[in-house]
Structure formats: structure tokens, C-alpha cells
Length: 267
Image (cartoon, rainbow, N blue to C red; front, side, top):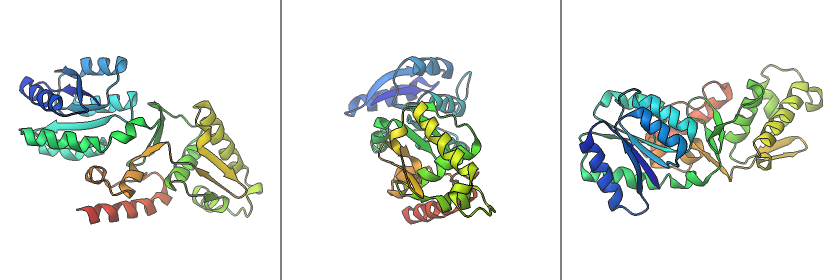
């Protein structure tokens, strides 16, 4: 796992470098004291995991993390900070873990070992973010949908984790209040399905979409999704759950309820 360290304090950089070197499967790819240089490096080199401070020259750690996730959405992001008040913001930025300074060797080792549990997602070519607003990425590139409704359709299908979604359910949840009785009479539904498939083809992921008479589904095998990981009771994901699951979609309240229950069980 290629690690990039970003911290203005050379002592902190040295501590993480030492512990990364001592653990198998970790390689310190680069260390930086400023965010802009780190960002430029990440544009040209593979980085699997970044450990960064929240306070950095030129660009704060939160902004840097956002930019890094645009380059590679599945990148594992760990904030190392001495500011406890930054924890909530780190969670909102979908940090995978937070470690507070001053760090001990045990703290550093613990957080790196935890990062190993997130490693399988690095091999997935498709990433779905559902904690907070929904977004889909393919090989690090954010998928652009033709309309908000088509994007919502993709979110609904992905939320089922391989389960089929009936035509009736799609119409009921995406076209609330519609009096249409049959899918053949719903031009909006037909257009949304067609557009979603065209979008998947454009990103060469059409193989994840399966459609049968009266239903469709998205095959989840090649998708890394934060909600899936929470359903698998992954402790690291639970710790970084910010209390929101696609709040822009009313039907996602059911998902939030389940997520809240799992997080409460794991406390």
C-alpha cells in the first residue's frame, strides 16, 4: 500500500515514516510539508493511503482531502490532528479514520492496521459514496448523469446491493404522486432507464446493469460502497459514519434508519 504523508511538523512525518516502514504491506511513497506539492504529486503518482494534518500551508487538510478524492475516490484518508474540534468536519469529509496528536507509536500502528481492512476497496473500479450526497466514480472519475432523476435512479438501484427493483417501486419512489399505473405509460421512467444504461456504456460499466421484464438491478460485485461496508458491520466505516445517507432522496430515510441501528449496535 503506497502511503503519502502530509504534515508541517517534521517530527510527525518521521514518526509515521518509521512506523510505515516497520509494517509489512506499507510503503512511504512521499512525504510533504505543504498541501499543494502533495496534490501535484498525487496527480502523477499512485497513492493508496494519505495521512494528513487538518492545518496545512496553502490549503487546509480538508480541502486537500477533497481534491485527492477527486483524483482517486477510493483513496484511504486518515486525518492526524491536534484539534479535537476538527473531528466533526473530518467525518463530513468522509475521512476513513482520525488520530489525535500527540501520537504515540501505538496510535500510529493501530491506525495503519485499521487501514488494512479498507484495502480491498482499492481493487474495485467502481466507487459509490452514499454517506452524504450520492456520487458514483469509475476509476477515479466522477460519473456525470444526464439528469438528476437518472442519477437518483442509479442511487436507488445501487442501494439495493444486488436486489431487484421493480418498475412499480421505481415509479413510486422517484415519481412521487404519479397516477400512472403501468411502466409502458411512463415516458419519464423509460427515458431514465435508457439514459442510465447509455451513461454506463460511456464509462464502460454497462455489465453491472441487468434488466428484466418489470424490474432491474445493479450487480454489486465490482462496487465499493460505504453503505455496503456498514451493512457488513465494518468498525472503521461505522466510526466515520456522519449520520447522513443520501439526504437528497426521501426514500433513503429507510437506509439511514438501518445505518443508525448498526452504528448504535457497534458502539
